[in-house]
Length: 112
Length: 115
Image (cartoon, rainbow over all chains, first blue to last red; front, side, top):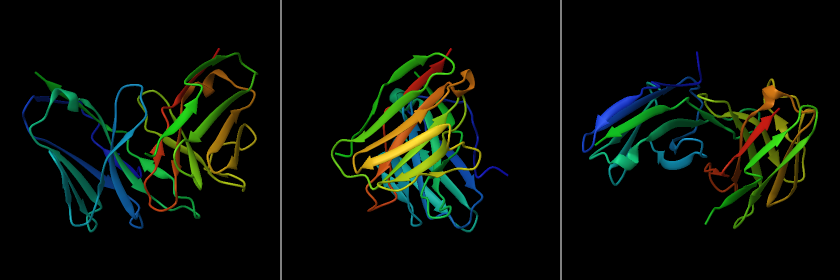
């Protein structure tokens, strides 16, 4: 089983719509969770951290369910500029290292 | 704040040669730097973790003698790909952490092509 699993998409969504992505992780000892955004041939950029209580940043809402080992991202009122690959990222301690484990990403295309 | 640079952004080299990639934290001290690699349509994969002044910790399957990592200061880590092969062609990305949180700041990446 992969450590972090995401639906690769692509998700084709009309501008203004609401879209949700899900992600599952296998390591129950994972301590922190993030959503990153990656544009084509660019480095990933942090979109938001994900907290157990759920958190919102403008049009973006992230939720974490530790019991089900499940993370979600909701984007409301989607914009053309939201088109990107969204990476679910988990911090998994391995022998003291704090490297991040990335999902393969979900490709989102916002259509005018 | 939290800017990380990488140099070069793109490099083409011949098989058998070595290539050095630099990663710098420009406005903070990075106690830990990470090196990732991303093949086309694949996820970023952690290669190694380096702490300033100590040996790097390599992930399983990553050859430490082929990918030499040096973290000589709190603002600079280098990755040297030795005896490069075409299958080493990839997008190499570094990230840096100040150690105060789990957050990592990514460099813009280096696209390596080995011919």
